[in-house]
Image 1 (tube, helix red, strand yellow):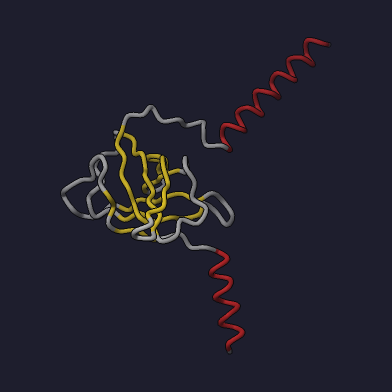
Image 2 (spheres, rainbow, N blue to C red; image 1 turned 180 degrees about the vertical axis):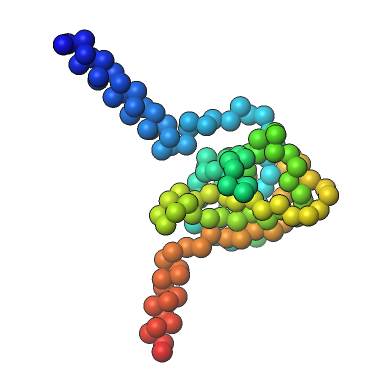
Length: 147
């Protein structure tokens, strides 16, 4: 009986560990192979380092760094893209979306039609900032009050 209890406790610890890895986005650690590209956003909302980068819903990389550019007053998001996804055209658009109503935020890449492809250190020229729920609600309330 004690062995079964011990086995059950051990299985519970493994399950909690796996849940913690899934929640913290550490379950899919990159091998380091690939390239980094940069996108500039006016507002990144709740985007964080290690947030997913997706194209057509497929995980193609992770956000590796976020910093603020005090000259352009924009957030510069560095994304680490896996090496097998090395054919994004130079006119690719980066957008910040939310998974579900209150889910995590991620960067979505929408490929363009150019023949030239993004390479290490390139900057994406087209980006759409995050839609901040508080700003949308505030705008609706302000519009209703002004009527």
